[in-house]
Length: 263
Image (tube, rainbow, N blue to C red):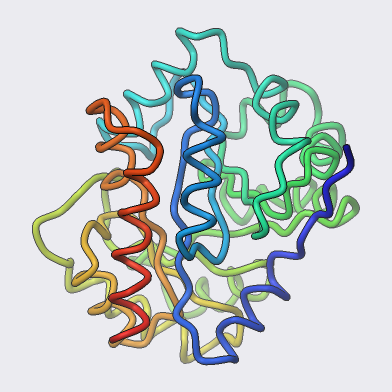
């Protein structure tokens, strides 16, 4: 079965321009036997795109929850190839964005890895441990396969650096809400609103804020500050790790979607 690959940036731009706040939930590929059902539940519940983590043994950006999902996936024998093979027949109805670390890109080679993403129906890629200054050849390889390179923008970056990041980013620019690893937070960091405003002032790309966005209220708060949308990962994955069914992920996304639509 051949599944149509939906364009990431064009889809997010169209949804944003129609007045919709963007919602990008996350699932770790291969974390359990039902991860594809979890992905489908999130897409059906109102996601605008779904971020799929390709597990790595040393996920330096990820906090305890996502680290545990990755460890579970690796213990099951999950590999980058197995995640992408399983995705090939997935018709989620929304764009898919792979998130992984550069070691897994470097090992097969940038061109081959980009091709494998495209062949699996993946429309974008987040590789957080490759800095802008060293990302040139990867960006070229991804561009050649029609895979949008989503770049991260840290709250400590200078205005000049943010401008260069936005100039090279494709799909959306991922605003990092605070310094540190992924994970749930009791309240929204002040830097979340600040980075959203700074990015919106310099780019027309969709600006999506992630890391530490845990609740519908926090999602609304950062969008009210100017962000076009949010990435939510740990708060959703925690429920699956606790043994709840894939439908629980859909419930979390539905709650976020309702809050964003009402906010």
